[in-house]
Length: 294
Image 1 (cartoon, rainbow, N blue to C red):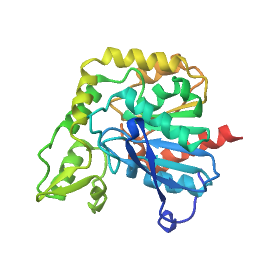
Image 2 (image 1 turned 135 degrees about the horizontal axis):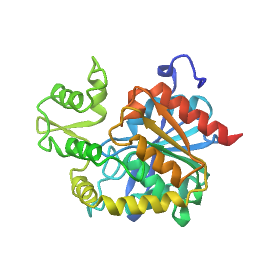
Image 3 (image 1 turned 180 degrees about the vertical axis):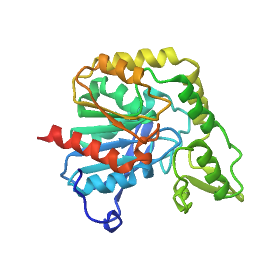
């Protein structure tokens, strides 16, 4: 089990970083743990932000790891792309430039969209900066029905919400397997108020690129499978066993492409594995990262 301080809430708040991606776009990030610890970079899923990893960052930082949690372009406190460029390859370039700036071998942990970015980046010439890869509930051949459900949620509510409680209702409908929190304050990290309504804190122009990806799944599969075949670094696939995005067949197909990949399955978790069972997720990632440091 992961050894951490007795109360994560007692940990110091992370230090704030400003990083640069492709085209000079400004990217917001938080850093947990000692500056000389093993570097772990976390990439969130579409429509999320770096705060999705806050508990994970604090707990892994307490073990001595240097943890960077980053907002992707157009998400959270990172700059929105003035040219509306949210292509997969552009996000890959963002990551490679960040890793060049951090100047240390990094374990990259990516969930969903972030996992696609990490996988494709690892196959690039600059991907040698990635010393190991953790894919969180994403594989080259995901279940299209599950992908469509994610896309549908992201596409809803473009006109915002009347209240935070209304946003909480939408999240509860999207994540019926997860107990609804009694306090909605956590949603404030994902929402911003404008003109008396609450909006998700990401660029709605992202949807155009997300939807173009969804319309050509064969191209995405081809690119990801090609990248997966190039992997020689340590790899961990974390899968929520209740996921509608990564099936048994999808996980097996990935392991055939990457025979050395390890698999960690979280019983009560769905596609949002890290948030569904954060303790089990943290244990799996910490055990993997520490094992490759030995």
